[in-house]
Image (cartoon, rainbow, N blue to C red; front, side, top):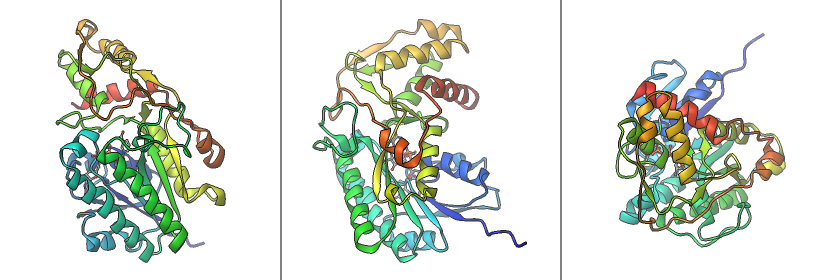
Length: 326
Ligand code: NAD
């Protein structure tokens, strides 16, 4: 019997934190993977573990160029669109660049995917779309007013995806990621996320600075839960599960103070001096909401999502990776 040809997935932003983890996972599951990235915030070293895999192809290109998008989607079955300029503060400093990549680039990818007749377009949406809504937990249907240019771009993505589903029949699913963390997340630079930044500072016995009193809380989500959501969204055969958005989270929340407590406790197992590093508190950041917590009921019901990693379990794995690789 002739073997079925392998399915091909285009992962945009595949050299970034989430994208490179997706590339690695799907190569291990016997897919062909195409990565489109311009290395704006991603790294070649994130591709080291699989760059020589025959099922992997790297296209260095920019989603702001429609022709790069068209080249990348050619012959592809599924798109997992991760490429974007992340970070709320970056978007406040440079809203034009954020809009060009996150909105115009997104639209290019939708047009190219529609024209190439890809089976499904799964994309990175964001919990920032909940904006100033104070509701807890966050339910997909109730959003507030965006609090940053970045949040606007991610909401516009959802609006465009919905229109492409309804107007052209392109199957889309948006995954509203909540504070994702894990191996390969960049700890460096002005726009680094809090977990890798604090891990690196503590490893160097430097005091992390918490914005505000540390009682703000977040639904910190380990990368392997996010990978599971991408896979379920990509392969789901449930007709009611497509052309919609899902919270992508663990479904629990921890304060910043609790987070730092766990980081110190787990890192002290590698170097006992870390237990004594002092924590410093600074000012609250513009555009930050006090609390964030996802309801994951919709994903459980329609996609059979079952997140395996609590924040604490994820932190232990992530810390081990940073300790061995940084
Ligand atoms: P990342 O910065 O590590 O990855 C983004 C990747 O996109 C990088 O490799 C970068 O080089 C690439 N890229 C940027 N501009 C590009 C362009 N013009 N053309 C081609 N490639 C380009 O960030 P990440 O944390 O892996 O985020 C991935 C996606 O998830 C983004 O869409 C982000 O907005 C979204 N998201 C992330 C989080 C989180 O907690 N990390 C939360 C919500 C949403």
